[in-house]
Length: 358
Image (tube, rainbow, N blue to C red; front, side, top):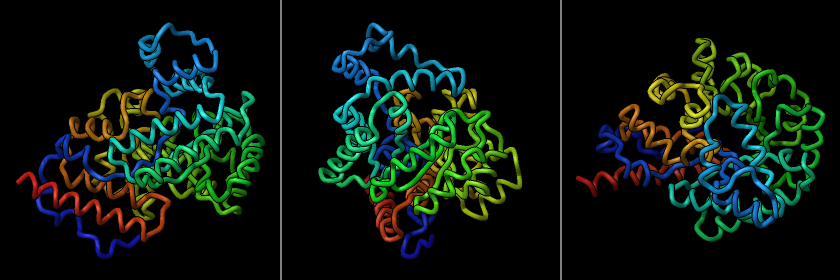
């Protein structure tokens, strides 16, 4: 998109300074890769289990937290789906979403595009409408109370069949005006994007934006499939793109956004430690990378925690942090006019922050 009337980040005074924790926490930003079930805190999990008379295999919150040690994506998903079982009623989904919205307010997230996985719940007998009504009611309340901008994304579970995904797409149609995009998540290995070609073609016919997890554990070929076969508008994760120079060139040329989740990648052993992460290299190459928290309560932090982790690993400058924040608004599914309002807030923040700290 164009950036007319936006002051280039490099021209903002002071932006070559190190990005302090204070700067990162106060910086306006958007989050584009957040699984709402992955924002279920241990305390809320415990509370909802008690409310719904569900017996958890944990004695207390501390025991739940100790279980958050993962060797790969599947070991996380096993616990993730177990935790989701405490969500039973519309009020449960409201409470879960409201808790995340409060974190948006604390982290100065002005716009969020959250993903919900209805199949996680419909597969265990929870009605689709219960899930989406509770989720949207919380988002609407946050928008009314402090102006949180949001879009809702429906993700299909790739370990289930394409036929079930198509059924879920049909269930979503009565809510078409409230759902922005259709995505693809869950176990990536052995479930290539091509498996869902017909589902995504139909979703495109209905006018949904399209996204897909690809290149987290799966190979660069999965990213190509998501782009060329599913025709997605954005890639979730995508960090393994650096294994294919032609793919990197394509991502730069087409300005395809990657919604990268640094803490998640380390927790799931995509990288052994943060200093190995390629997000800053991708940024320097001109790829439109964004920072996101993925499943924050399972992976050790919300969005600001991810920015702080990057700052500590890479000595992030203000200019780099602002570019990542700029990308988060630019890669979002809001209108160009809304993006420009956020761009201006971002530039004004940087100028005012440095004026106050000089």
